Length: 251
Ligand code: PEP
Image (tube, rainbow, N blue to C red; front, side, top):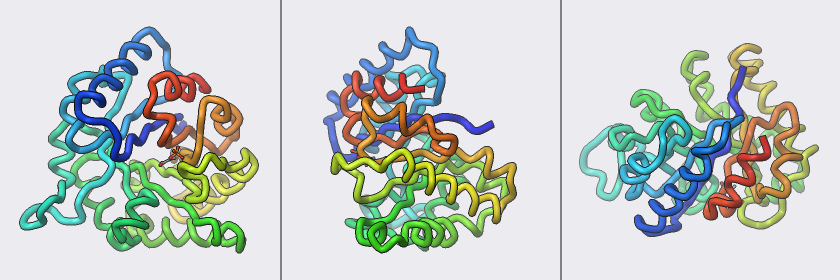
């Protein structure tokens, strides 16, 4: 059966020292808890090695927020999937809407990044989601379908089974405007149905589909209680241990 997951995305926040402090705080709080979900923190690349050393890996997995679309070589400033893996990270967030919007990531780039992440034993947390105009034009289903088809449908069923999906309506990210539980359930069920059509019911049933976009301790329970919402990808509320734990406690 699929895993429930609460994953934090720290984005470009926190110095190394602040990040280690937050990871340590989270680790201390979670040490005394029995968790009903997997917990992941997506930290800046500069922090991964220290954060991996700081947390109990049995309770907290660490994610990079990106990896390169090239194996190695003359790509100044880039960090390859094998480099990410060598830090001890187990996950990589791919296709976040901020990467798509500000850094021109396309479904084609993300296809390559996914292949490299999988080839290096990383679990991609693969983000999809529509912008406001697409939602207003009722095009959200076709948008997420093409994002998944173009970046992930070349995979074998065994490869796809290693992917975590994160549905993040762009209009809900960092805006305080959260999708209603009904909106989330409707599109998560749709996403699962297209995965089932392509890879079969078993793969679809086992795929974790997270919701992201202004998820907070106050709305997490209602969102996560939907049958097709298997947790959350959390931005702002992942930057304070108490808030992040409040969301983890929703399970
Ligand atoms: C995100 O950036 O993945 C996200 C969901 O952000 P926020 O929770 O702040 O909306």
